[in-house]
Amino acid sequence: MNDQQLLRYARHLLLDAVSIDGQSRLLNARALIIGAGGLGSPVALYLASAGVGRITIVDDDTVDLTNLQRQIAHTNARVGMAKVASAKIAMADINPDIEVSAYQLRADDAWLAAQVPLHDVVIDCTDNFKTRHRINAACVAARKPLVFGAAIQMAGQLSVFDTRIDTAPCYACLFPADQMPEAVSCASMGVFAPLVGIVGSLQASEAIQVLLGRSELVGQLLMVQAQGSEFHRMGLSRNPACPVCGNRHTSAL
Image 1 (cartoon, rainbow, N blue to C red):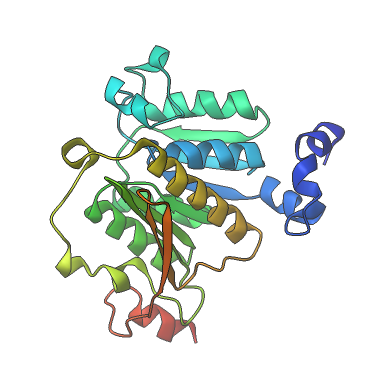
Image 2 (image 1 turned 90 degrees about the vertical axis):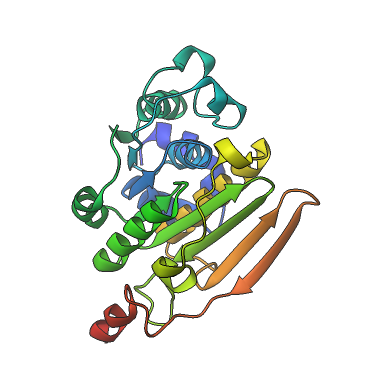
């Protein structure tokens, strides 16, 4: 690290959990953020400020006035701009030394199959079950850790799915594709503005810890209730018959 980096990341370097070695790992890491909205905004800003060296962010949407209630990477002046372009500006304002690749597109199976293997961690900041299952399948296939988050109304969820670990479940173990609940959205159900900041910040924290070689949220589901500021954990089990990850664990032995 150069002198400017030693100064920029000085508060990280004081932490035993990070130190110079850990910060160097972050500077050489690659993270993929899928979704640049309510969850993706704090994830993008914190990964940038923490010095994750190369960040890819993908989203097909543009900034709308209704987003500004909770999507803190965007501003009134950037209404109508692609969300990924807006987020890239915000990230560069915080840390101009990192490399940000922005893609304004919907991450389909082919794109995920090409991009996921190039990254060290994937952060799912999307808001629909079909896309989450696509992301999960790509991460299982490439054996890449996935940091999942969700928020609607006053409730949020967070977990780390890391099928490099033989006993760890994947997203489909928890939410089978053939049992997907009825689709919900912030537009129809509403969402509490600080909740997405809480969940997104926790996703950023877990992504950084994954990059540092540790995460205690693998095999755990963290549930957040903003009303009452309540946090609960629930243990998760791998489904040996999971159509997505079941045979991956077996073949890795």
